[in-house]
Figure 1 (cartoon, rainbow, N blue to C red):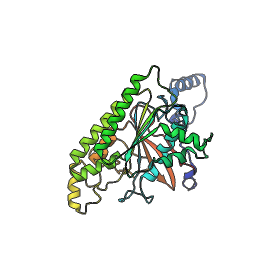
Figure 2: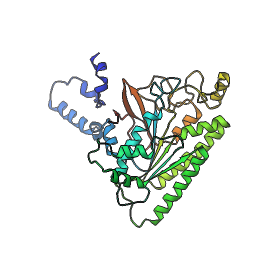
Figure 3: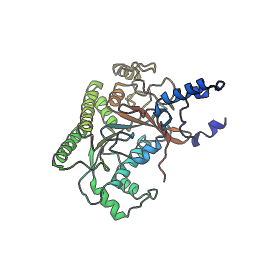
Figure 4: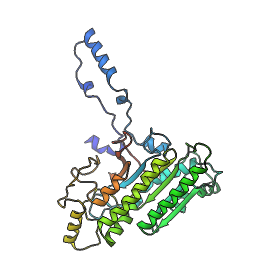
Length: 353
């Protein structure tokens, strides 16, 4: 009972080797030598693995492969939904899911050179999505929680490096990605030296899942996923081509983990079930194709990606960060790490006021 009561104060447990739990045999030179050799033969990384994601969060985006938030990859941020409405009693899903990428974005902007006016942060977002508005970015830069405070004038000058691209539909989002691709190619061609490895270029695309859902509602799942696949392929190519300095972040606003139909506005339940079947979802609530991706804080047997749209989006993500709420605490968890060994890392993380 005490362990459950103190859950909110817990930290990730350090793995314990099974052999260390066994009682030691009577000491003799042979056995002692064998035990020593056995321990030395084990991988050295076993005792050095850090399951606490908080250190990676505090380091921010790095041009290094030794961190979760690295350049050269597509990083996704999603919110775990637990009820049919998808808000889990919190309200608009983006109110929680954008806090972590906003924190990472703020750290990168603060670490940038104040003397440069060249854009090194690009944010594509739906026109009605204000999670990364200039006002909120400025407030985040001026937050007293930072070790080094900025004056208002300094913070505004740092925001000159941020370029916002509001879009109204998925087609416009794809076009915006293409425009940023041209800028990155031009910037790379003009560079006469290695890019500043302490200040990566960050490309954030918010609400790509919601924009794709709109296409599906207006036409059909095949068209929506086809356009989404094109966008994801372009993002993957950009992250690989500019791996030395570019970090791509997808901020999903619809949430994942629910078996409810994405066509929530449609009252024809039978039609929805047929649409879900056409997207590859078993209407009994079980995922037809198991990708082996799950949350340690989610319900057992509940698929995280029950629809074709969700699975398509997930396939375009290299490192997936899942945010969930447990006992009013915000949990950040790595559920996928295609290019590293970060799966299973987690921490209790809440942005301080």
